[in-house]
Image (cartoon, rainbow, N blue to C red; front, side, top):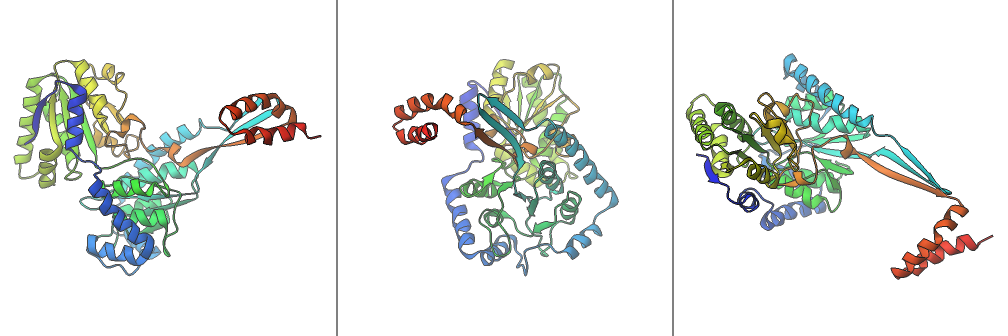
Length: 431
């Protein structure tokens, strides 16, 4: 069911796993580009056509109405609303704590004043996945940090259901987070709408949110026209455990992550062959149960992209983990906290038996929109920082310009851009 491999060369073996798994291929890019170009040319008509073709529903209008928002509240429970509010509150506490540490700075230096100002971006488009599952929690993860940052216009899009509506709890979550502009579109055509704009949808300054490979590729292409948060494709989980770890809990963690979609990337890394065998057996036992939900998705996901990696020693395992750079990394066993200090490239590190990734998706106060496909090497989770920009204003006196003009002359001359210096010289020589 799930393959077991022995790690002999951390970098090479990690690269093989990455290359054999999900990737943004040239063929995928070409197909996505065709749809995006069509949306750029035909606008709303193209969106309606692709929504019918790919989602199986012909829409009369794209925007969610006030009546639809109100009806959504009648279709969810009080406990669900309470849960969304808890997720929102915990995440907001985390994001506000970060925002409160960010303040403008003024630097004065010999007649030159530089002011570094923190500003919110003007608008953002939040992609909320649909397909095989519903993601009301993702609505919270996108909107809360944007609200904390002070973004004025927050737009949400999500694929429609077969009846032309949007998942009601996702709409309720949007309203709880203060999002009023919501469109019933998803996939590549949705990303194109946010990036290029149409008659019905004004373009945004930045696109955030996770999605499958088609959405990820679309965001990649859209980055030529609009900012994006990160490559946040199919979800990933790597668990590092020792011989003392509970194999059943590890198996449940891998299964819970694999239920997201057919292209989930999940694995166990261990130095214990005995644990490897026991976890494999537990996974097989779970999947043989008639009561498990989403069994087909889990089974195919683990067959395609699941693995158990056996390393001879902990240092090899750590090197392998850092090279894989998983979206989620769980560290369990007696040396979990010490091992965490050696991790440099995971999107999110979860330490200990009672910190499963499944809980971090909801109520730990962390954001579950994380870098995938190895991009954890260069960034972490979505946060308030993704909705802010650092703007500089500079004001110099004549004496301040005079003090630096000789340095400008030397560098401008060396770079062959002498007119840079002449523009400065003219000011210092003027009466």
